[in-house]
Length: 213
Image (cartoon, helix red, strand yellow):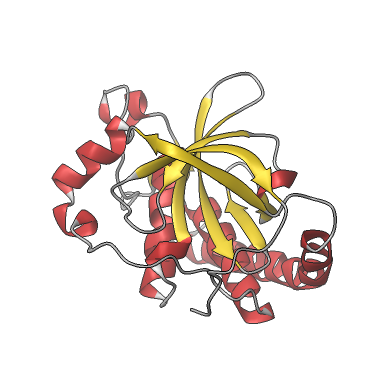
């Protein structure tokens, strides 16, 4: 299959996912207003992952950001479409490889500019694309979770006025965090991306800090 054919196929899959995502927007919004927990409870300070610390050494400009007030995105149909498109595009374009295969080390966080990466690299790329598109950094939180088998995994949590939604390289759908199969462990603080906080029992009410992007 030629490069142009592959690109057309990828664009078609993105368009299909976007159409499906638009159809699901109302259902997700209704679900978020239902009995499912909307927001994970934030606990005490947690240790930043070593991968993030080393990433900040290599990409200093990405981490030298002043602390700010928490901001949640207003989840409009347009915002939802943006999330679906970014999640689908990155999942399509990046080939999954382990850090051992890619870099010869157990753990390394990096942008997948060579078209390859593991879960953290997918997260970094999605976060970068959304920030460049004007989304507030304070609403885009790198999150560490545990899979059902106990393995560690990383996803991007997007804080919105209708709940916390997850962009995941293992899923084509953008899901409410409580609809995922994961146990949420810790994530970046909304006020300072270089501080990390533990996650505990869910909150069921919408926080007063929600604001438009």
